[in-house]
Length: 460
Image 1 (cartoon, rainbow, N blue to C red):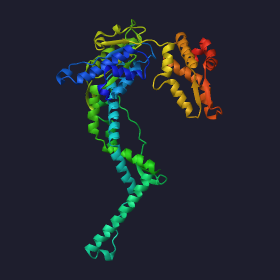
Image 2: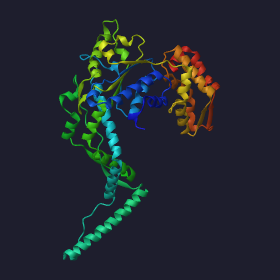
Image 3: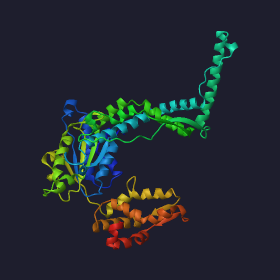
Image 4: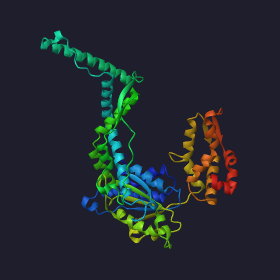
């Protein structure tokens, strides 16, 4: 199934495999993603005028905001960047400038496309690597001619042909041995790039190195040629090293760059977390001074502008922005009006309780209970969670979230680690290879901590 053509219903169905509940948020991102596909299929002139349907997710921490955006990007194979809005500061204050997130997104996209292209040429790279290994194992020798054989052209030609045939026969024998794994224990000398680098030089400027028109890495790379060193490695490792080298050579970086920039412009997703932290308060001093300034700096990027990167100019007009925040001390309407208008879709996420925790522990593809079962299985230990144990874990998570800070589903991680601490430590040495975790076991391990409210704040 092509991710580009998923219907909203199919997108929600895919997200349901990893995220429990939050149907409104899933529905909103599914519509936004489908609208992007629709825009790309309308006449180009009209498509340029259609703005992305940016979203603000409102809800406490640990309810699935980031996970929804991350899974959405993975589903669509889109370049995805998560960044905290509070990391930015208004131009003139110390901190990152807002355009840096576009540069970071482009870098991610380039790496993504490069890996895809390397995967496409993997077979060809492996073939070339095999030939290079055979050259190392059996260097091609110039034909050695005896004095009497070079007296006539005919005898010389016959001798050359005989040597070439012998060389070819030996090479094919070696190739068969190489492919069957009979040469895996043999070591070869290989010329590889020296990973050690010289001193790192950083250039700081308010608008980034890109605006200076310099690619420092390439410039210094030309002045100081890349060092190589000889290593003695086993044949399988040599094959892997050479295949990677050849894959990089076979990839057309101009094509990669063009595709990566286009992918950012047409299907990039930026997740702006903690957007409520840049909403100004009544305070007129301290860190609040620059908050509205950050919003105004973000505005051109979200509205659509052109950012200079080392890969060329990148338009942000059709990048999808998903903002998120708890908005416990503020509300989305406290954002500057222009920025509010750029986030037409708003969705509130539900807090999580015991029932949701039970489902989170067991239902998703990568559910926590499944993770711990598989991890302990690597030690030869089989752990079994009873339904009562899972219900008790969910109950404790809900209680601790009520008494202490509500960190949503993240509370389950701390509880599971505390619960399985002893088993995790002793697993390699345990004689008993099957452990059943029931409600009594959970109570025994966690009840004392939960009852001591001060202690639970530190441990859970």
